[in-house]
Image (tube, rainbow, N blue to C red; front, side, top):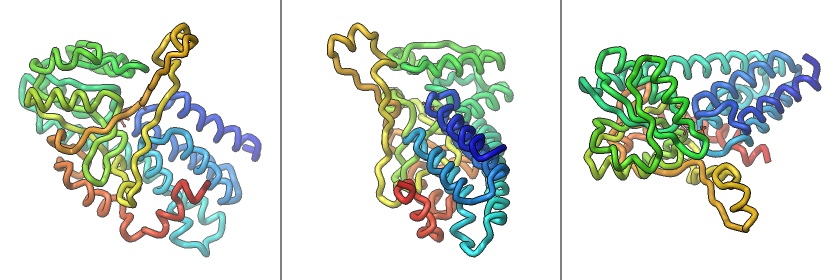
Length: 320
Ligand code: RUB
């Protein structure tokens, strides 16, 4: 691949994330690692990988999995600044493979751990389209424990349709409901299981808009609210004091043109924050933990305590 083709490939990859052809926190992270690997296979200078990392980081702001994937893959340079470009590129490829492996194995493990928490004949509610949440539901179903699932449609992008299809294809009894019907059905539900875009250092969950309302309804009805989150969904940036940026998308996604042309304002945040008091358990690949343990996951799993300087070096601000 020539230099022009590499930059076109990176631009196309970035636009796939921006257009949400590639979406969901885990898939975005894995795709970023795959893109950096492909880039490393086709360039000669490490500077070009940095450019790719910088472009990918700018695609979507909320899911910290993207940031963690890029920091994980790019960490080689800052560890050994005397290395040649060729050595650094080899390291990028190796670390990209390690990250991809992390994504693949973590979801399976989350399924195994999470399924143990599900009792027989369970009715589960889920929101949006989370591969980690589906891993728990499908493993529990495989073990014969799932009676039915309610999937919210998850407006405005209807990712709930994907979830409903995926569950139905597995043979699960699935009912699609509008987001505003959550409280109507919550009494019929034994567990809510959702995924995560980011978990903050104080144990709050950032996930698809509407998640916090479901958590509120679940708490009121005393339905356990379970989050399925790989450890790369925990945010070291929040340990540094940063707030999570909530992506706000175009009003055209939710309102007809006629209303927009009348000058009616539309707000369309894509994610919201659920405080830790509403979360019963977070199922990670290293265990089922209370949200209060988020700090330990960031410190021990993401290793940022020791790599403090490197982390700052590779932060988006450094690239700007
Ligand atoms: C997707 C979403 C998912 C999380 C977790 O939002 O909110 O619940 O990303 O998914 P969007 P996963 O469609 O806007 O990217 O468990 O697959 O990482």
